[in-house]
Image (cartoon, rainbow, N blue to C red):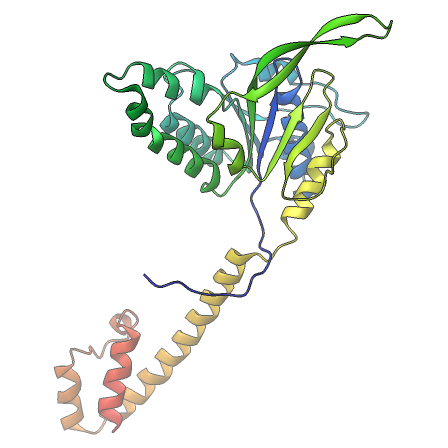
Length: 317
């Protein structure tokens, strides 16, 4: 298969974002705020109920995301009835794919996976699968590499915006409190997932116990290096950035529609000329029959255009 060389240009994108942090840092609510902001920006004419119905969440955290229903975001907005899946074990890659497909079919256009860490270190996840394998431990990790490949495909090839939360391994550090005294503070370090998984995201946020986020990877260049609290407006900004590119799919659909229109015009022209050529010429009628070209309007519509061109060339020369 040969390579096709094209000039670089910006295309519309589907968001693939990760929110990483320790338990209680606010990853789930932050993901919902981003998701809602994106859909609010995408559909300004829709009601709150209709916008929230375009947000889906696959919940591996024992339905804890439902605690945010009716949560007041600001003076005008509160968390509405988002689409929800109670994602129970096993946390296999196939089940993550099934959850995303189910939410898409239900109408979700942005999907929160809360959390992606269970695919690695949860019941039925990759670490558990590895532990159940016999033989060489190192070689067994190699046998499980396709699981990561399938998960990346799930995140990148479902044509839907995805925001995934990831737990982090928890450690404690001593920090000064408001009274100037040392106190232990829970911090997140390494995400609970395969080491290379962070590279698959377009945007990564580290969220701390004060609910402050900082972008550790930002292909959008929207968020800089400062810590901030995630709001609905961040989702709005993200959606506008994602929509700035050329809509390649729309372009392709338009190109195909124009081509189909042009093909149909050519088909009708060839058909008229073929009929005219054989109308009073017995020899050409026999040639046409030999080409298995049926003189029937209904069947002609399905006759291959290239074959029609060959018939036209033979009959009009």
